[in-house]
Image 1: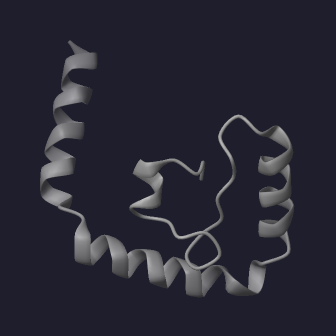
Image 2 (image 1 turned 120 degrees about the vertical axis):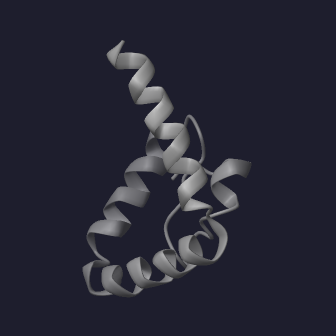
Amino acid sequence: VSDIPGNGEWITGGENGLTFKPGSAEDLVKAILKASRMQKEFDEVARRNRAIIEERAIWQDQMMRVEKIIAGLVQ
């Protein structure tokens, strides 16, 4: 993800994901290439992220917001 404060609340580069400098295509390419070499770690990273979401996210509130947005688009 881009290394911005909002993403930093969820992703710690190198621990549960990779970050890149916003606006830096070169940094993004480096992160993509690094991710492509980390397939063995994907399951563990997914487990860590799932635990973070379960601990910190308010799923019901977010899904209600998504439903309202979708309903507005359908009308």
